[in-house]
Length: 403
Image 1 (cartoon, one colour):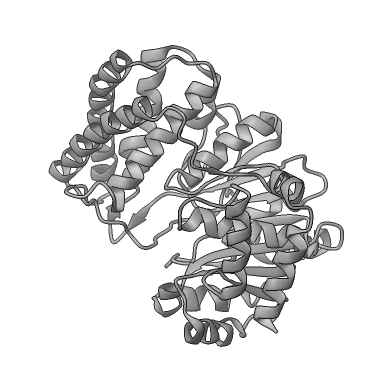
Image 2: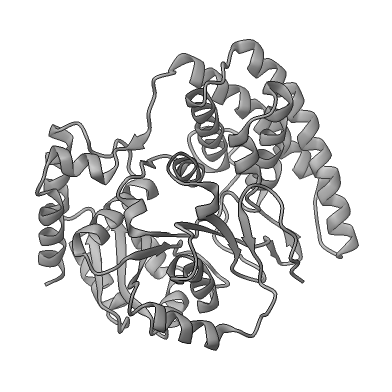
């Protein structure tokens, strides 16, 4: 059951009426005549054979207001790219696949490396960045939405609600973040958001004092959701992180570039389930361990740009404050699970908090040791300034691959 409560520094758009899909899609079709819409799908080739993506494509195929679908394909050889072309041919909309491992896009990446403006890491951030570049180059759309390709509970209402705030010409929102609650198989999920991000933000407020940026991040009900929509002018100027800090990094870029009045969050689903990452307690370079470290570093880096002085003493105090705050969160979620007849393993939750506590310190040490580390990929405005015809080259390479 939704609510209509507004809190924090951004507008929250709730899902109060669950039977508006047909009406919303008709409105979006009208909006599309003045503000054409594109959907970006960053995908690994393995996801084409996974349990979620075929269902997602069937749903998207029924969306009449979409002007363009842009698929970023990673980890695919030539035969797998051919398979992908057949797989996505079901889409009736104009669509293009960016074969990121193909010779044309690899050659383009070499040119960017020579100028020192290429993405530094492989992964979702790099994939999204190239898709955004193609969206700019194609010139077909004025609003762009993005979501992952592993959503097991996908329904096209998710997309309609995500697009609506940035596509409606009567609204002034430049950026919209999707949110939902994470329950599947009678179990509360979303550990990184519940047990790391929210307790960390609230601990930082205690340690460093009032901070507008922390209040802004804490306004998002699900800061780590992979679903967001934005207007085209905005994606030209944002810098996208190439590591696991993608979602927090995008929110930070919106904080830097937009008034809070132009940012909103929207409830896009009753419930949501997707592929779950392993906790990976023995390997800090994979799974939730790497994710938690990268997210904490992203927050620390942004605080530094806001003029906050961070020291070894700050991180030692933060560790203790975070640990207490996170344990209190476990207690709150346990009570919430019990009253709703859901499962929550308190022992596993507290083990997760103990691991995240270590990672907060690791992230702090990494920040202190490498304060100049910048995982952000340059904005497309900067790239075009360095290589004026880069968007033409990117568009031509994608069109030749898809010919």
